[in-house]
Length: 407
Image 1 (cartoon, helix red, strand yellow):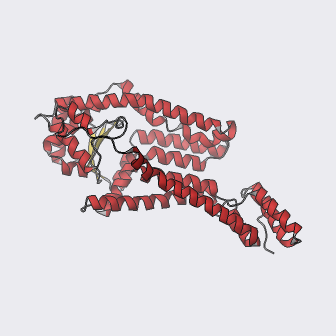
Image 2 (cartoon, one colour; image 1 turned 30 degrees about the horizontal axis):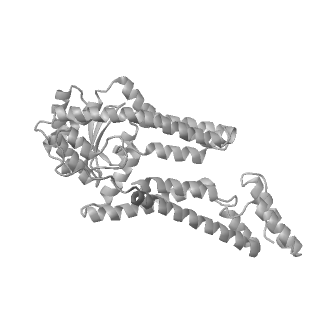
Image 3 (cartoon, one colour; image 1 turned 90 degrees about the vertical axis):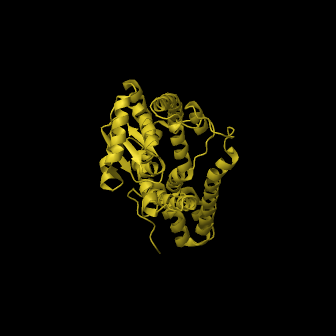
């Protein structure tokens, strides 16, 4: 999950940094190309892994589940990438327009604007009569009803609510692995979130809004300096940690409510175990187990301690290595490519210079140096090519300078 989430973003950022001034599609085009290609590659690897664990997994359900994750959980990351790819280095009219549009999308998606989009894409369907009856029975017990109940086509077993629109969602996989009593217990947990105070709801919305300030990182860095980006990141982490504590307390509160309305003792704990198993999540994770906590501790709190000792957390070295090693290899590969293009540009004349400048392998100072060396050798024509390319790269592809002409 970590690689499929961050590897495309990392690839896009590095591609953007290495894009040269002569690149026809520009840094934004190269960044988007890297994002989608890396996302496709990581997605294919993830599909092959999940297919080996769940042989009945179909490509359609896998792709549908990926779109559901992006539309309902990962859309802030998409807007963050789009904003930083589309704004200028200062607060130009273009930057302001982009940030206003991104802000509008943030507000719309928070309020549930992804629902009609997911419905149009065929990712959602209204709950059938059986599920609706279960939700209605639990809602009567809890005292709060959702506005609508949806089923999302996904290989991940999950259920969640939208706090602003008060919409309840189930995934098709969760409905397959749980029986009716277990579905009712998990429904009680989700409807318990709808009983939270308005202050808590506003805090949850604030947590989403924390992603919006970094959308202006590029123009802020250009106007005030790179240190402002560091301050944004530090501020985001501090605020996210503070808001995360409230979210964890609300999850424990919802667990208690589900345990209260579970019917037979142990039903909710059994449902949690099935969901974690379907999603291949270990009973104990590293740290505090995220917002929801560890399965082992949640089952124990629900009065059904698992019949095995509490496992140790996964190895930090192995899990971190699986995520970091590919990124390190990617950086090393890019550095070697940069060295190659610089060397190629130094010995291959016009064609090498243009290729190196296209992929970001040279800058204007390097080109000036190569021109001076060619001039010392008496290669006037080659020296002029280097000097023309240096002027063009220095001014930028958006300036009025003309690309170096062929001799």
